[in-house]
Amino acid sequence: MNAELVERDVTKRDNRHYSPTQPAALDLAAHGALHEPQFTSSVPLLGPLIVLLRRAWNWMSTRWYVLPLIWQQTAVNQKTSAVVGELVQWQEINMQHLAELEARVQELEARLARYESR
Figure 1 (cartoon, rainbow, N blue to C red):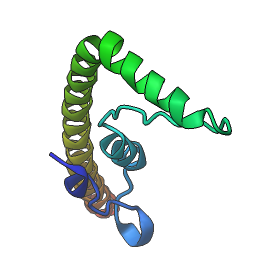
Figure 2 (cartoon, helix red, strand yellow):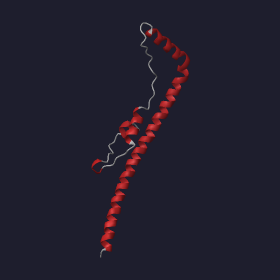
Figure 3 (cartoon, one colour):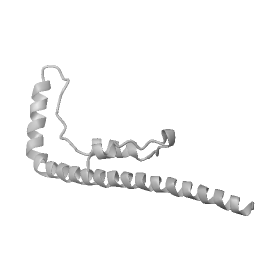
Figure 4 (cartoon, helix red, strand yellow):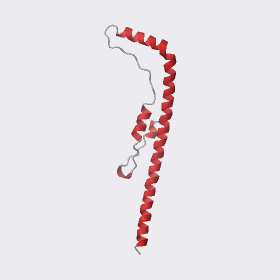
């Protein structure tokens, strides 16, 4: 599942349904992937040297430990996003069923009122 599937319009304007979880699901899908930070430095003259040293240190000390964690967390985030997207779709379906049932109850109450008034 991806963000496009979650983006379906389920607003409650003009008798349509509104899913309050849709914006959160879209945000989750959009921010699911983690990225390595790019090192920068605003220090004049020494800035490029600082960046070079930070990159070298990152490669030596953390690349082999942090990068697999980033991949693992990204996979978890994407799976979570997919599940939340499916839940939003089920919520949309359930809201539609609820609206249909409410309409049916109103119809039956009207029929009962007519029957009782005889």
